[in-house]
Image 1 (cartoon, helix red, strand yellow):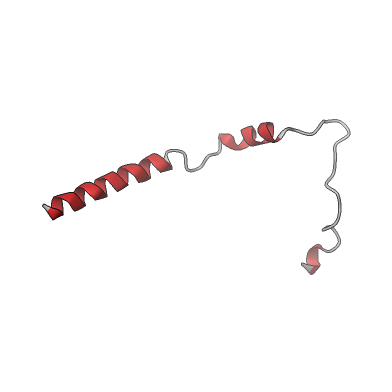
Image 2 (spheres, helix red, strand yellow):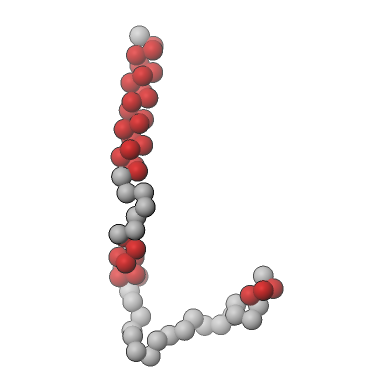
Length: 59
């Protein structure tokens, strides 16, 4: 923590030209970078396939 002692208690800079962006607008900027889009669907499909294989083995 010592390496940040000179800046740790400073206020963040506030622009005189631009009003602060809302959290919603800030989040929207990064929404298009969802690196794992489709991941949940892929995991769900894999889970179903594995369950089907287990069912086949049990019968």
